[in-house]
Image 1 (cartoon, helix red, strand yellow):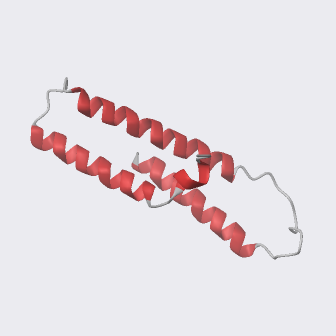
Image 2 (cartoon, one colour; image 1 turned 180 degrees about the horizontal axis):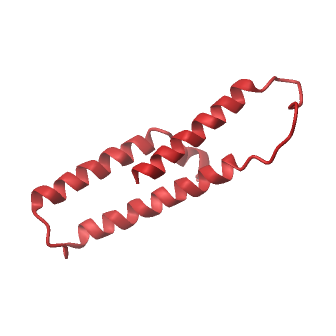
Length: 96
């Protein structure tokens, strides 16, 4: 999940750079296929899916794991999810 979050942050940084370099009122000097938006949606979907799967596994109770270790994993997961939530991608992609 950390790798997925890193990819999301990289894609957002690339998008910000593109916006910063754009010159209002002028067409781009050249046009290339830019899959940033699609890649961002795909990576965010993967992140959310993985998060749900991990929560399901952790809450299943069938793991032979020490309670302290389980709580440590849950804290790490919560921290990663908070970082992702801070990017506000749910507002961007949710048509709610």
